[in-house]
Image (cartoon, rainbow, N blue to C red; front, side, top):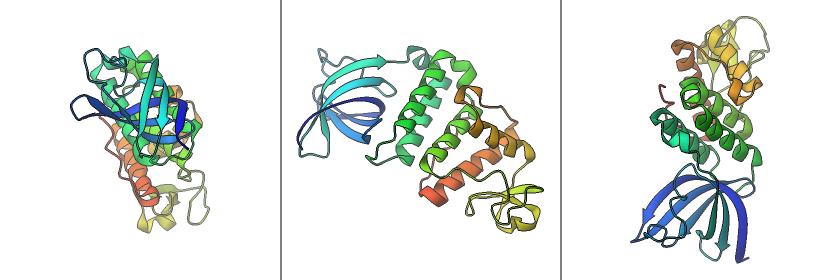
Length: 241
């Protein structure tokens, strides 16, 4: 039904359109991913100012008509994350976080948990850019996205036989760690990488563990291939920060 929709949203992407408009890719808590058009947003005296840029958290009023694109009629800044925008590494991490959300959660299904996880990630990057604009942080965030999507890998026991000892590999197709007897279709997963994944899933995003470069490469492969196999989504590589 046509009419106004009031919602918070994070701007995942903002695209120039026509002479003065912007097309926005938004993520909202109760309507999932939405597309909207902000008419006249690029005019010098636009009432929207610069708040329709990526990574802004906004309070919006949208008009829902017959078009697939909603129309932005009002936008109020909840947080613009200014410190994040002043740090190249944090800006890159924010872009990759928003891209991952947009790829894994590309429907209008409500998922308040994902919305708040994304806001938490942006707030961490804004509050302490150097501390959180890291590859470990990006991978911890993606593991939590997989959990929210229902694709969290099984880490407590071999996904094939149930063994809890000798967990030496990871099978994206099977959906978790495997033991040495079941590793034919798996790639090696060191103990440190296994511990990182378990720690990242079991702790707050701000308390995600660190790990060596070798372990993080293995974790990234596990995350990327799990998303590709089960969600049919190809994620951008994590940054090297």
